[in-house]
Image: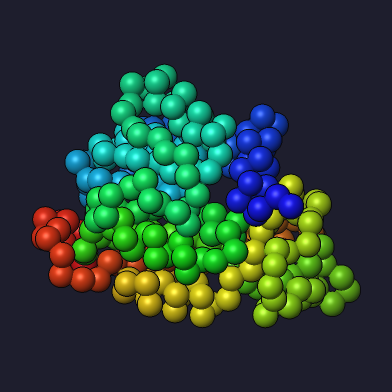
Length: 265
């Protein structure tokens, strides 16, 4: 039987070849102000020049090149070789320096302890069974005082039906479940062909704290659209928030005093 990791590696390789959603490199206009593009809320401060940034499970030619264009020393980790190839392609085209590492987000043995000031992780924890193990790996490679910015699919969004019934977007999947979610087609909040896992709030927030992070802020990016057609992503987002974005700080009293000083409080 194929493991979830192998399944999702193959699925994302295939999605790149199909030029599917989330596999398209950053557009030219996004490089005009790259830091504002990736950090619109200003969680990372006015500059990340010279900072050691890990873009985790973030291949695809967007995240890593934009952080590199903002002046950071960037490493991007992804399980998909095809996604990482997009990063190298964009970096070569734009004269950017970045390091690519093919690995799963829950096994960062290839990276040295406390080697990053900032870890950024777009929506991706849904593709592994154990989000707490991801947090433990991130904690190991984040310097004391370093920032971890991650975005996740909300549990209720993964529970709710793709299309509304006469009663609205009903919860059709159990909150307490084991194993991957059933396959899906025609969904704008899930990626067909991948294996996805629902993580409870206790795991998403409590697991992060227990791994060695203190949560500084939590946002729910707004995708609701009052004019959207019934059943569309914007319409569904009026009733079920799709994502949550978390800013956390690595606790501890390590030697990384420099990063503790520059990071905004």
